[in-house]
Image (cartoon, rainbow, N blue to C red):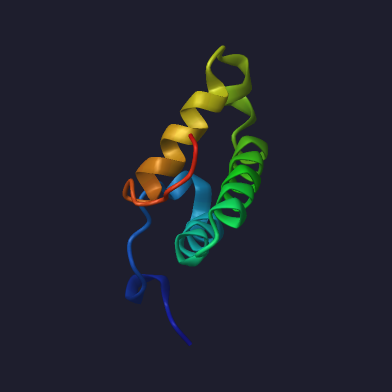
Length: 79
């Protein structure tokens, strides 16, 4: 069994390890259309996890910024 103390640190812990794993998976996709669709799905999931951001006028922009930050700005998609 692998403990959380033995795993990589989470960049933004409020989204959890599952979202971080999805982002890591998106980084491995070679087809740009698949990456884009995966990134849009991840942002939708993130918006469900952070409903308090919906009150802000630019909440989708913030979620895309969070996605870029968590991917270490390596995810090649249309933000």
